[in-house]
Amino acid sequence: MHDDVAELAGGFVTADRTADQDFEARLVESSTLAFRVAYSVLRHQQDAEDIAQEAFVRAYRCFSQLHDRERFRAWLVRMTWRLALDRRRGDRRRQARESLSVPAGFASGEPPTESASHVDDLVARERAEHLWSAIDALPEKIRVVVVLANIEGHDIAEVARLLALPAGTVKSRLFIARQRLKEHLQWMRTDSTR
Amino acid sequence: MDAHRLDEMSDAALDRDLQALLAADPSPAFVARVRSAIAAEEPTSRPWFGAWSAVLAVAATIAVVIVTLAGYRGSRGQVVGDRPAALATRPIPNSGAAAGVGLLVAGLQSRALDRLPRPSRRIVAAPQAIASAEPEVLVDPREAAALHVLIQRMRNGAIDLAPLLTRPLPAATAASEVAGIEIPVITIQPIAPDTGEEGVRK
Image (tube, rainbow over all chains, first blue to last red; front, top):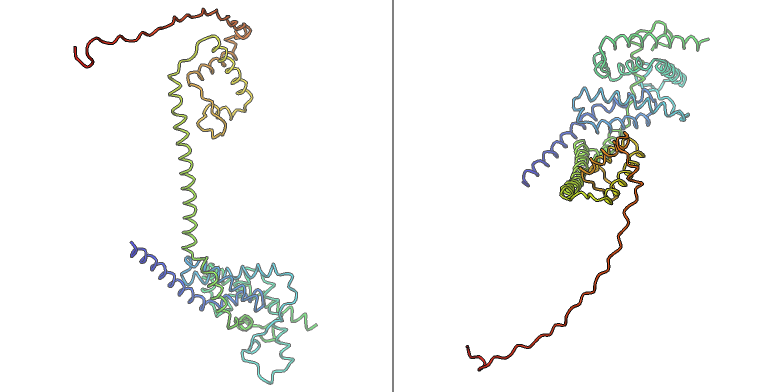
């Protein structure tokens, strides 16, 4: 009897350890993805980390249904996106957002050199603001597609899996997103040169 | 992005700009923070533990309720089930006074039934289902049926009990004088001793 109980308890412990190891692997693999999804909405380092952390904690609670890698990533992306949107909507009081950080190599794909002038930095910052503004102007369904397509080099099939959409839908939404972004950026450029 | 020729921007250039814009990385401590948040969550959020503990709690509550209800109904069913059998053997009084009392009870019951709303009548008709603290009024089923018929006929006008109710009850007869009982004095004579020697068998 005691042996049976010990065996059963040992089974649970082993199952728990295996589940924890699986989750650890998912965490390491998807932490940047979740952070970037949150960051694309919030554009605030600490807020994005908080939201991504909350999404991981929720994923842990229902990890028994999310063992599959693809399912886990898709669930995580959608949950993070929703949580970030909720945070952004509910965070209207925050007025002073952290100044937009321009990732290294934004303008040319290369790290900034010592000769990069202060003017170039300001220009890059302004371009980033324009691009964020253009992204914000997109409808939510199109915005999530373009964001995911430009995170970690996801192709159309990968984005379709993450959003549980047909590949054709993703492709058409991506096309619309690019057109609108270009139009918006062009409009902003002509507006700023007047 | 070619800032000077936005109108000729290619998809590749736009994607490159977007990728650079979204290439933010979490802080090095981010994964560690998530690990500690999950470790704090762990004791209370084991999926199997949470689900099983909830199921066990609900099952235990249901079992306690069922046992309590079964015990209560069993005890009531025994009491209510035994008493009519005892009442069935009791003779139904047939005297005039008893008839008067019966009519009074019938009238009271009729008025009580009239005052009660419809759903309550069913409860009165099935006293086993009532869980009341008040003492239970037990009526022999035959008596109840008779009273029911009587009430129905009174309502229909088939029976008019007005003369019975107006008829004076018979006056109590005076008790007759009881003659005194004379008890003669009883004298007890001592038993005469036997002649002959004591202990000698005759």
